[in-house]
Image (cartoon, rainbow, N blue to C red; front, side, top):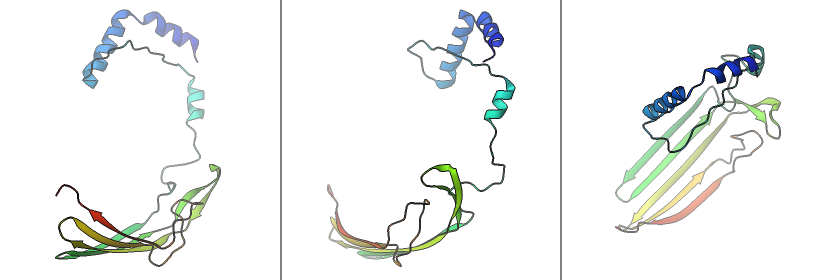
Amino acid sequence: MLHALRQEFNASWTEAKYRDFIRTLETRTGATLGFPLSETPCFFPQSLMASLAQTPYKVGDALLRRPRHSASIDATVAHRHVSAFAQLQTRGAALDAEPAFGPTGGLYLNRGHTVVNIGASLRAGTVVEIFARASNLFDRRYEEVLGYPAPGRTAYVGARIAVGR
């Protein structure tokens, strides 16, 4: 910390400036502070701040876990007491971090994937709905996050009961 700047700040800080500071905070937030507020500004050399802000990345670089292309197509059909859906989700390759050590362990390309999900439901009366759903219908092997495999083909069957109708 640059002690000369800190001393200059402390010498110029007054009770009136503190009251103005609190009044400004309360005006901007719309809330009344019910406790004393302390401040501790830190003054650091520009060279230190510049070194802390250094990054190996530049504008336009690929973001982690953000594919350049992704798409989803959903279709839903409903007739009387029956409804069904089909969904196709596709995602392009994306840059990802090494799973055990994060970005410091290296960056890798996580392959893209395409998944199909389907489902249907039947309303039996006014309170009961029977449903079935299959996720990852074609049992694709992929990882949304590198190092964490997504579930294979998964099926769900069940009933929903509406209470209070």
